[in-house]
Each structure stands twice: as C-alpha cells, then as structure tokens.
Image 1 (cartoon, helix red, strand yellow):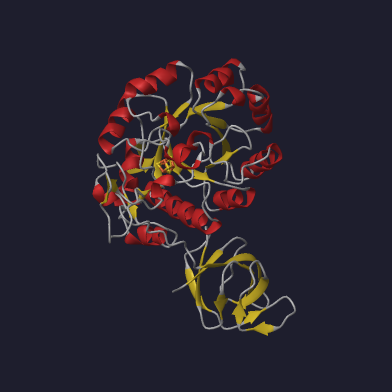
Image 2: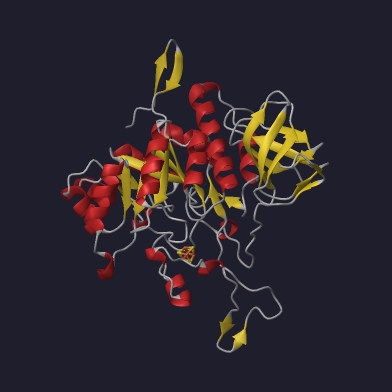
Length: 413
Ligand code: SF4
C-alpha cells in the first residue's frame, strides 16, 4: 500500500506528488516543457532511440538539457528503446557511459541486452523498462524488478482496476500514460509500417500506416464501394478527468506522449496537467473538478480525445474508423520574447498568420489566460502593419498586462 497523504494540523495533505513527465523533440521544446511545469522530460538520442524523425538530441544537446533542467530541479530521461538487431550492437556501452557522464537521470530501454549492460556497467543511470515491452501485470513487473530495473513504464492497455492491483502489490516505481496518441496495436508489437513502407516501427521508423486510408476487399468485391475509405486510427488518450483518482492511487510518474508534437501542444498540455496536479494536491478534500482543464486541452488537441483502455477494453467509440479526424492546430500565432513595461508592448515571434482586429489568448505557467484584441502590429522597421504574415518575424503589439518570456498566444477563432 503506497502512502499518499497524511493529516497535518487537521487537514489532509498529499505527501506523494506524482512526477509529471513530458516529451520533447528538440531543445526548444524541452525548455518550454520545463518552464511550463514538467518535473522530468524524456528525449531521444541520435542513437538507439525510437522516433528517429523526432529531431533527436546529440550528446551536446543532452548535456545542455541536463544543465537547463537542473536550474528547475527537473531531470532528463533518454530513450534507448529500439529492439536491437545485430548491426545495432556496436557502441552501446560507450553511449551509456556518455549519458551517465552527462548527468542523465534515467534511460528507457526495451532490449534485454541494454538492461543487462546498463546494470553491469554500474552507472548512476536508473534503468526504466519501456512501454514497448507491454508490461501489464504484477508478475512481469516483479520479473523486471528482480533484474534490478528501477521503474516500469506500463503498457497503455492497463485499465484502472489492474493499475490499482499493480500499485497495491508492487513497490517499484510505476510510470503510467495519461495523455497522447494511441497505437491500434499493442505499442511496440506492430509490423504494419515494416510491411507497407519498409520502415521499422521498433527502430524508430513508424510511418503511421494504421492511419492511412484503405479500400477493403472480400475476394474481388470492394466492400467500401461508394463509401469513404477505411482507416484504423485511434482517438488520442486523455485521462484529465481521472487525474485525482490516479494521484490517490499513488502512481509515481504521469507520462505525456508526443516527442513529435509542436511547441504549442507541449506548452498547453504540460501546463494544464501541472495546474491540475498542483490544484488537487494543495487541498485534495475540497478540490472540485472544473471543466476548464479539459477545455484547455482541447485547444491543442488535433484528434478527438478518449480514455483509451482506462475503463477496460477500448471499443468502437475509442476509434476513428473511416476517418482520420486530424485537424492540426492552426491558431498558435505568437511566442513572447519579452515585454516592454514602459510602452506596454509585448515583443513576440510570429508563429502563424494574424491581423489587426483579431483576438489573441495568451497563456503562461505564471498567470491565468488573458484575451487581448490586436489593435496595432509594429514590425522590426518600426512600421505599423495590418497583418503578421512572415513566420518567425519579430513584432510588437500593445498589451496592457505584463507578459513573460515564453508565454504563448493563440488566435481566438
Ligand atoms: S502503424 Fe500505427 S499501430 Fe503500428 S506502430 Fe505505427 S502508430 Fe502504432
């Protein structure tokens, strides 16, 4: 039984706050994830990591990430979770030693050989069992614990009832997915991409073949004639409505998926979960769940959301059969560089088209969301312009309320 709370001066307080673990595909996203409240960030190195297209980190980047994280008492986890083929064996020992020297807290691994040498080398690195291994029960967890592993990242297929049993009957760190994309197969047990595009999903190359459009045939008869093509795309998962009960269960780490996701997505999702965790833990017995957390997440969602396998078997309602339902978030339009207090101007980096007359909602780890009308746009030549249509252009707009570096603006539509 995990000890979650205790009574202090007649009031129950949470003494075991879960870690909020965020993804980052590059240093810019990593710094935003930490500024927006992540306790830890997982990144992929150039070698031995899945998501090879996710702008993976060099060793220099990883050192910079560790140094930046330290300023915020945050930590860095590095994925080394490919399934090794013979030609992947070379260089792994040197790589793990380099990660250790860089001050990385943990590596996330799927291949038993990496588990073994990470422990044999007697490094400071924690070794976390990747979700790629689909660990779903207490016996499998005990197996990894006996091997000396420090944490198990559960498969996304663990439902609430099984999670409760796992947390009751084990005493190793447990990491649980609370938000992100789902595979239509067991994560890490899918070969669709290998067959269709010769890209190995277990070595970082998944081409998301499950989300492609397909015609369906029974012998020569086309079953979807005249209908829209078929796809197997799952809705994304969000457990925002269940976070209080997950905190009470004593989950050690809440994982957000999405190393390929945008800066705006990372900032929105991390800050929403951060605020909810902090709000709940500050006064759990008087906490009232507000719809505002869910509505905030929707501003960054690019697929419909569901609870995945949380209630047990995921059914049709958790899928996007016959549709892809992808509508990339268009409204992220500005990132704050600094604020000119004397002239009450926000200096911003343009991220998407907006114009005078639009409204922008600024959000931040420091303050509540604020909506301002765009009354003026000033370019780098100090000229007034009607539209902001040059990506990354530095602009000034009047804002009465003081904004902070890295606050984000999204167009209100
Ligand atoms: S093809 Fe789809 S189900 Fe298979 S690994 Fe890729 S995302 Fe997952």
